[in-house]
Amino acid sequence: MDLRQIDLNLMVAFEALMEFGSVSEAARHLGMSQPAMSSNLARLRLLFGDDLFVRSGRVMLPTRRATALQIPISQALAQLRVAINPPALFEASTSRRVFNISGGDYAAMVILPHLAAYVAREAPCVDLRFRFVERGAIPEWLDTGRLDLALGVFPNPPKRLALKPLFEENFVCLARRDHPALQDGMTLAAFTAMPHLLVTERGDATGAVDEALGKRGLTRRIALTVPHALVLPSILPRSDMVATIGTRAANLFAPSTALAIHQVPLAMHPWRMSMMWSRQQASDVGLRWLRDILSQIGKAA
DNA sequence: GGAGTTAAGCTACCCCGTTA
DNA sequence: TAACGGGGTAGCTTAACTCC
Image 1: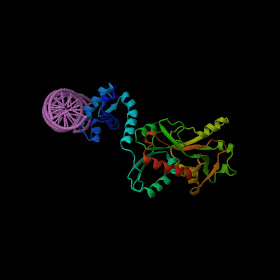
Image 2: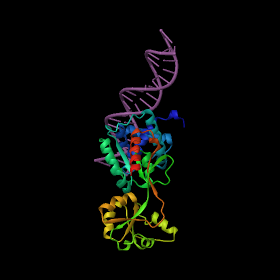
Image 3: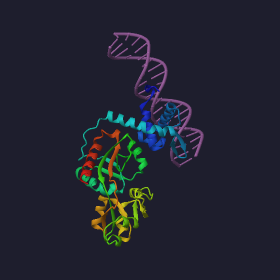
Image 4: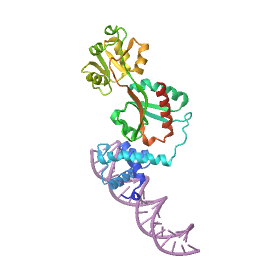
């Protein structure tokens, strides 16, 4: 395919069609008429030799070819935008930028309060949109710009994404302060005999603890799984369950509740809280500013 | 009724030949 | 070599039509 035959604006139209799934909406977004966008779609179909979008009721669904084209075209356009509009200095004090960040409730508890306080103080017009995004969808959201940054544990990130550890975290046990089985402290026997509460976003009843127990030929009973650690202070004081969670989150709960922290009676590897972003955005000064702040928060956490 | 496609007409731009 | 002018073409709009 000869690049001289390709109108770059068609790629912009393709990007909008992928985003909105509607010729009319894409046209409105780009400030053109709907027939003009329809014409662009016809030319795209000719160019790629594929329908690209097929009508299904009131929406235009992308074909497999269109889906495969989305990320490379989006990346190419992002690089072009950076090349054409070289980034200026990020003026935090006056910027009205909105940062989209994903993370679980652990990041929301441990990192977000510090980030929100810093931003409110140093960048009062900057807005944060913190949301939960399904783990498998995070790379695509970063690629397409729907997310600026993702916070979490990312063991095998795609090479096109950049990763920076923020801090290492160890596990501790959290149970009610007057737990009858823990008056002499946490032992392995008590740990395996107690009912457990597991915090898991995926809903499956296995975790790092089960892996460590399994190496010693032991098991535990997970009596309850919950998707958010924030409910622990409501549940644990009224039950005999024990939860194994990160130290920093436990330290947030224990002082103000009837909960006590115990060491895990098992050798467990610490885990890393990291931030991940698209390498396409490497030169984005606003994102660099945000990453610097998160690095500082990670060091102090 | 809403959304996509097609047709007709208009306009701006590009290409190329001519001229100074 | 640069400027100018004419023809061709691409892309836009509106209007009408089709489809779900």
